[in-house]
Image (cartoon, rainbow, N blue to C red; front, side, top):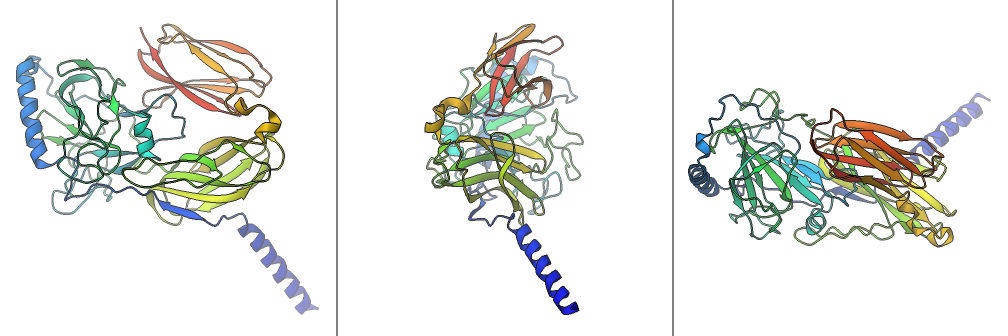
Length: 465
């Protein structure tokens, strides 16, 4: 009898264990994103280019008499984030950091946090476009913006922007001097995308400078953002605060991002696989929004700072918010940027569904429709329709939306992503018109996001005095 009970309990435990493992998805494919980064032998900016820049900056400052403006001697510049998604880019995020400043003055490497996310002699922060960097570049979806106000003291445009080799080729770039005398370099931009402003003109925080590209010594579209404490290239600064920052005791960021920022950059659903050909061929996402009932589909996740021990919780959400199916991806290796995909059988009932992923408390969603023909509403993926006005706005901002029966959320963020305003539209509201007071909100560039069960859309708003 005891032996029979023992085998019964053992079988029950094995059955439960197997059932639990069924929720754990086997990776069908993926790994690190196929992007090559610069190295010590092929830096973003060569010594010869630094010498050329120094001469150009000195000449421009003398010609424009910028040295007569009486800059303060104590640095007080603070930076907003220098990248901004363009209208039409609705991915959950758009970047990862490939390299920080190398703080080690020997042949070793050490970033500001005492880690190794850098290469020997690297003098800036490489913010890499992801996923689909060349697709984003081709369609002008990722903009470089001024991290702080200042004066353009050097500019270069018109050079090849799809480099796949670390070389001494000339980049497209802008260099800005701030009111305290410090300088920021914006490097590798897309050909002919740069602002029409010329050397000597000023820019404000958040102002468009160009599009992320792969010009100069580069192997994929990214922004090399470099800071000098003065107009001397030898006077390097590292804007990130950390234990191993020997160049600067405090952060220069208005809101410094964490050293590692695990998140889902993008989630999508496909009938056929993604095509990631590598530099310099444009990627083909092959993402779909309409699927046949009961078909098989591939569910993709693109991750930033994938970290060993963390788990991606994934599920297909029914139209009523319940779970159709769910699974997890366990992170077993650290990656700067990675991707994975899984095949799942779709529901048989027509409707609008959601692919939902949660990683490190960060949620990313992708809506899709099963049996669009049956619903006869292929555009419902993008409903409700909404508008925001006036733009630019002074004093008040208005929104209108139709078909808000399932409710919605309105979020207003500043140029560095800080939440300024949040409002809930209750279910059953139908057609909505709302007015928001802008009292106390400084003039500048903001982003308003409209979130409903079927869509998330962000638009740029300019607030004036």
